[in-house]
Length: 250
Image (cartoon, rainbow, N blue to C red):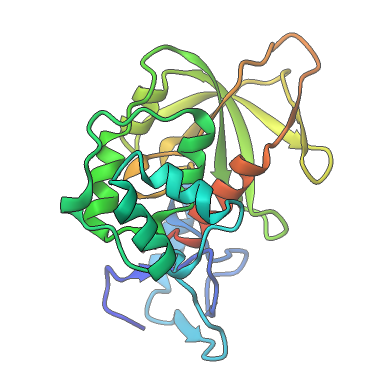
């Protein structure tokens, strides 16, 4: 067990937690109610982490984007750095440095923005942060579908629909509550909007990728109708890439 404040790879696994209070499973703190943290603290001296040394935890920084071909990645990175630098990092497994970043007020279409979330492996940390800080998001309210960290073991994420200002969404504090409606998975990639009950989710529960803030997909849905959403591959891949890199403080 590392010192208090160490990062815990909740979604990567590779460990088990022993001696938790009855009826409580180990998950991100934001998913607990008001009484569960107190019960955990009362047993903190008995709780142990068992590391599975046979599991290879792979950082997203070492994972090559799965959905995009090298030329597509080079073209996308060329909006951020010069073409020569983009070709070098893709073909030679080099890293983009902060001083290489040329983009200011970076404007990307939806597919480019989501594909970029798979490309953190090509950036040094400071460069990745610089790019995230320069991406421009719409200041107009629109329909957004956001992925939420799932609390069930058989699902990696849930989807939630809201009318929201994208720029406000990515800058919101962790205490901010997002109003909207859940989408119920009907098949492997098909979801149905549950429009009969409005709910709220905390920004802290949304899946995000570093400095980019919460992931989102822009799509307006009519609340009064029977609405279905087929998750695009680019959005699904961006979510999975963010989950691979997800760590939190315990």
